[in-house]
Amino acid sequence: MLHFKMLGTAAGGGVPQWNCACSLCALARESPETVKPRLQLQAIVSSDGEGWYLLNASPDLRFQIEANPELQPDPRNGRRSTPIRGIVLTSADLDQILGVLLLREFQPLTLYATALVRKTLEANSFFRMLERVPNQLAWVEIVPGQPFELGHSGIRCTPIPLAGSLPFYARELDTGETGQASLGLLLEHEGRRIAYTPTVPEITPELKEFYRGADAAFVDGTFWSDAELNCTHAGTPMARAIGHVPLGGEDGTIALLREVDFQRRIFVHINNTNPILDPRRDAYRAVIEAGWEIADDGWQLDRS
Image (cartoon, rainbow, N blue to C red; front, top):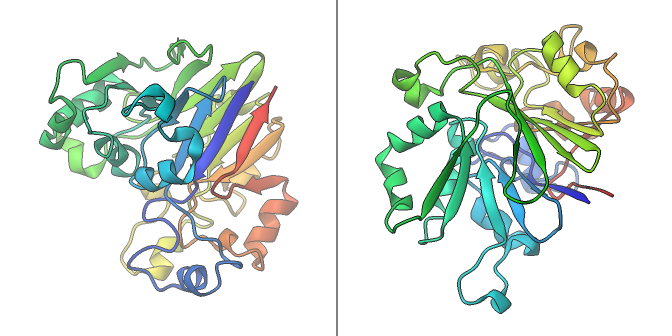
């Protein structure tokens, strides 16, 4: 059985965002039954429900572990143990890697990453906290387009290269290796297929083919419109300029993927400014009427 669970579904900063008093963040604080609070993006996958693999490592990871018993240590396995078998890093974005530092308590970890993402992390002295004892950290190199197995789980993972470069803090390390900085993942087990792309910089024919036939596709739902951030905070960049295709409009994700055949299509990585967070808004209704789902924290897909 392929187990898949979203522990967090928000973009960086979560919902509500700590420094934001926009209408959506205000509703998340004052009326959480209307706009649900969300932790930052985090997904987990397992083939047996006992050993779990993290897809990236959220800044909210400690809270997410404590809120989800399947990720907590079992006393029957001794005083120190974890059901977390490994972490797949699809980029070096801070929202995807900061959680790794929270797992520094002398716990052996396996990290799956491209050579470029590994180089980026190792260039930061903070990550030396993960190498204080022998064999504390084991790296498995990801090569875009080449499938690999997640440990001994039987889950086949194919990394799909996406457009994009290293994040701002590490631009000087970018050597221009195509597809090394940002990845989508195709997860397969016993005939089931999950496409995981929480960041989508552009909708290409190759990406459409990647989604085709998936049992479920988790797709970048960061922004509804290209100018959304700028409407909330003047001077901020457009959605596409920071690597996110907006959902709405004739050149948005919903329209561009309308004809692609995949069973379930689910938006994740939703920014605090996105009107689809409020089920009373037109944008929310447009998503649902187009056949899309909006994942909440705790959303699960278990398929036999």
